[in-house]
Length: 231
Image (cartoon, rainbow, N blue to C red; front, side, top):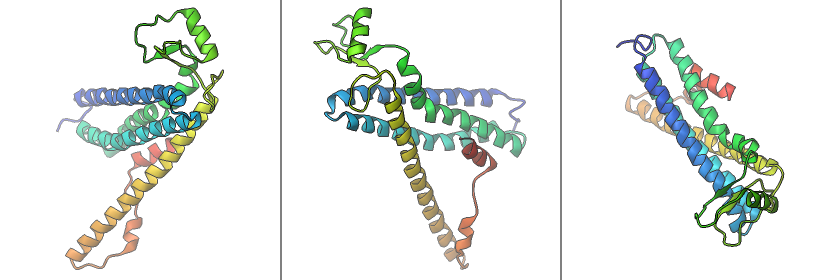
């Protein structure tokens, strides 16, 4: 096979695919983040709306993250690098870039983007939104009488407009940490059980003695270790 240094097409195609995956992650998370305002105002429990939206966003992040790892592994194998060192370096760079966007976009949106401007959601097109109306609605935090749009503003845990998104940000960060902890531990435990069953089955088929100590060896690569340490 031709090394990737002499044939850049796999490298370019891989980064293009990673960019598409990052865009899908951003669009999905943005949809869930925008849904937060609707849940806070219509769920009947503003705190429950905040928590539910944060958990849905965190769950979407973890599900996509679980698919990104094998995808990057497959792309790095397809790129066919000259050495294992270069392979591990590209694996770490690509996984870190994709994971950084996936894991931290929701935090960046609540900390920076949401406070930059006022815009409406679920607009029916029948109610023209003027600048004066936008400022008034942002101050009061109430939609027009006809309910043609829902204003996206920072809100506190009681659902009232706020000058900052600190409370929403704290809820989202807590949900991200909680879901990541539960998801990753459940995934690692399930992988360990599967590996244990396979090891026992292989040992029984060949008449060997099964050793528990054999499960203690790490199967992670240098790229995996670098990625986990950096994140």
